[in-house]
Length: 133
Image (cartoon, rainbow, N blue to C red; front, side, top):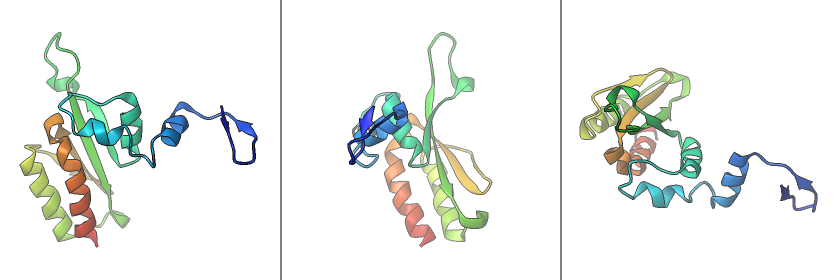
C-alpha cells in the first residue's frame, strides 16, 4: 500500500511498486545488464519491458537437464511500420554483430540477442534514435 501526496492510501500492483522504487525505470536494470550472469532478476525483467526489450527462455536451444537458455528480445517501433533504409541497415548490421542470424519485421523490428549480446542494447537504442531522426 502506498500513500499519495494528499495522504490517502491506495493499493498498487507489484509492478507499480517496482517502478516506484526504480529511479525512473533504471535500477536494478542498469547494474544487472553489465554483469556476466546468464539472466537478470524479475524486478529487472519488469523494468526492461518498459524499454522495449524482454528476457526469454529459448526452449529449442535448451540442453536436456541443463535448465533455461536465456536470450533477450529487443523491439523497436516504427510509425506506420515504415523502416528507413538507414534503420534497416543498422538493424541488419546488429544482427550480424551478435550472430543473431534472424530478425523479423511487422510494424516493429524484433531482434533476438544472446545473453552475451545484451551489452549492445544501449548502443542500439542510440543507433535507432540516430537512424530515425
